[in-house]
Image (tube, rainbow, N blue to C red):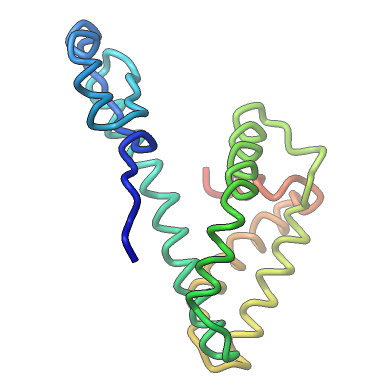
Length: 166
C-alpha cells in the first residue's frame, strides 16, 4: 500500500537558541509542517521526544497484543489495524483528556474509573490464559492498575494510575 506524503502532518521538535530557529523556520516547516519550538533549553526537544516515544512503545506493544487476540480468535489483523485507524480521532481526544486530567490534577470526576479499566485489563489476562497467547503485557498493566486501586484510587479517573508511577 502506498503511503501518503505526510510532510504537512509531520512534527519535528526543536529547542535551543530561539533566534536560530526563527531564522530557519520556513525551511524547517518544509521538512515538517508542524515544526515546534520548545524553548532555549537544548534538552527540551529530546525530553519531549522521549515522552512521545514512551507513548508509542505502549501503543506498538498494545497493537501487537491486540493482533495476538485477533489471530487467536480468527479475526483479520489488517481489519483490526483499520479499526484502530478509524478510532484515531477518539483516541486523540482521550490522550488530550488524560493530559489535561494529569496536568490539572483533576481525577475526581472520571469519564472512566481506574477500577473499571483495571477490571477490564484483568479480563485480558484471563483471555490470554484461555486463548494460549502471551499475557505479559496485560499482566504488567493489570499489576499497575491493581496497585493504584489498592492505594485507594479506584473511583478516580483511570489516568490516576500515574500516581503509582510517580
